[in-house]
Amino acid sequence: MAIKKIMEQALNNQLNAESESEYLYLSMSAYFESINLKGMAHWMYVQFQEEQTHKMKIFRYINERGGFINFKSLNAPKAQWSGPLNVFEETLVHEMKVTEMINNLVELAMKEKDFATYQFLQWYVNEQVEEEANVVNIVENIKRVQNSSEGLYMLDKELASRVFIDATMTAV
Ligand code: OFO
Image (cartoon, rainbow, N blue to C red; front, side):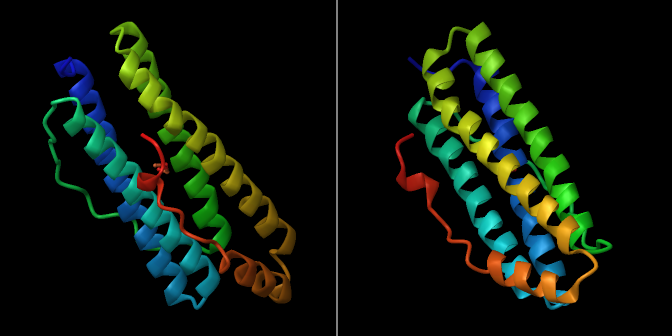
């Protein structure tokens, strides 16, 4: 059964929001490059790659359900921050907003009795738990080492080890 217009539109909004996340994290990666925190720049680059996969999962799903893709133009992301804590605190606020958007989508899928979309969205529900937990952890660690350049150096090295996992390769 083809997807209803109301659900198609809501998923398209999410697809565009994932593009905005991509753009934001790439900008954060560039910022970290500019202040020579290579590990954090790498972490944000992996985050950018992850957001691409979040977008592409929705892209594939809308197509599979016989819907249409509607891209919107994107606003330029913010480019300057006051330091690592500021960046990761803003990342947490951003991810909390995304979680709310996903929850609203789940609510809509239930209301429309679109059980396939409801099922599809469960991956995103779980992913948001992980996204928020990861960032909370980094914010706490930055607070711990904030006044120690050695601590910041060690944390930057740790964040350099993040590995990108392609979510489009896992089940939809
Ligand atoms: Fe796509 O989860 Fe972050 O924004």
